[in-house]
Length: 74
Image (cartoon, rainbow, N blue to C red):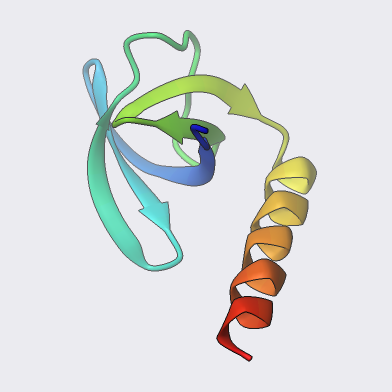
């Protein structure tokens, strides 16, 4: 199974952007998603943004990931 994760775009450089995922910053491709702006959330899969994501939905998804990770540590 493949999972895409929400990341926040912090800086755009042409068809690439810097994305922040919980403090981890990574350069990603935004070539597949049009009209991405700094501050937007995108779904990241295999180094590529595959769609834009509403901020509220991104936060909900990130909270689900956090709660799942904490549940696995117990």
